[in-house]
Image (cartoon, rainbow, N blue to C red; front, side, top):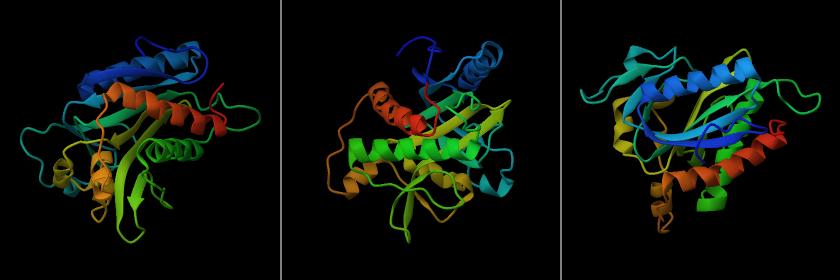
Length: 232
């Protein structure tokens, strides 16, 4: 999946391991291409070097125990504080919400629901992990309603109806790193990963390269977005 893939539909591009600042520069460039040239969009899949990112409204109290070696960046997106690092697959969505099939109008909330659905389908199909969304919250959870475990976080920004930022799926990151923040503003929920859920279920976790995981996830993401009218 190399190269810039702005053609018809929503296409994947895999960036590999990349710093947060470099990823933001690439994402902004992609947004300008979409805005200035009418490109329909892409999802960029990557792993970040370790970093804490904070949405616009993150209270300082949510960043309570950050070690010296973990950088913090304020991000122009929705959501609060989260951790990115090796073993986590991030997806940055640069998609023109106006390019929706038929009479359907651009709708950021329906777009986020489609992202949640795409991640949930991938987890069920590839790893037999049942997931769900939660009323009034953004992200993907597994476990019971009484003891939810969050496996994916979502934070989207929209400028001129073109999205930036996206989601972070915990494949096998160091979950202890989430303990230095209040993840997404919720101190009660436990953070989990694909590896941990497989282990809890007594199944072997078969490690794949992140680019192959991204390819599998993108197929589920395309299907979920198409059902909401965002695939040409």
